[in-house]
Amino acid sequence: MIAAWLVRGITVDGTGASIGAALLLGIFNAFIRPVLLLLSAPLILLTMGLFILVINGLLLMLVPTFVPGFHVDGFGSAFWGAIVIGVISWVLSAFFRGSDGRVHVLTHHAQIKRVQGRVIDPDETR
Picture 1 (tube, rainbow, N blue to C red):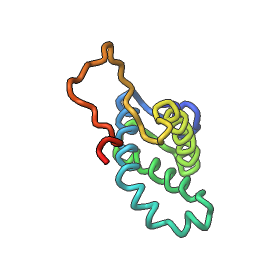
Picture 2: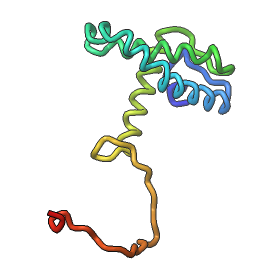
Picture 3: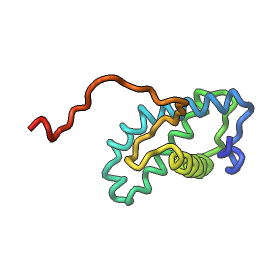
């Protein structure tokens, strides 16, 4: 929705179309994008990674084919929309990734559960 609000040429007819487009784009990014990145590795290296933006734009252009109510006018809109989506994803991932780079589920436990058993000290096993 933010990309449709910021980029001229991307329109969404409703919340359902927005959710459908987000889900489908996520599926494309999970399954199709790695294959495209592998096949276009020489171009990506030649352009110092900028061709990845083209791939992201092409995937965004593919979404309206399957999701009614989501419209992308042309490649320029898809290109800038992919940049906006990438920046938003990068900012949001900063809140959910740990220092090790992995995504951690944030939970809150009211109590610490006591566990019975003995602790094995690695120095004692030698």
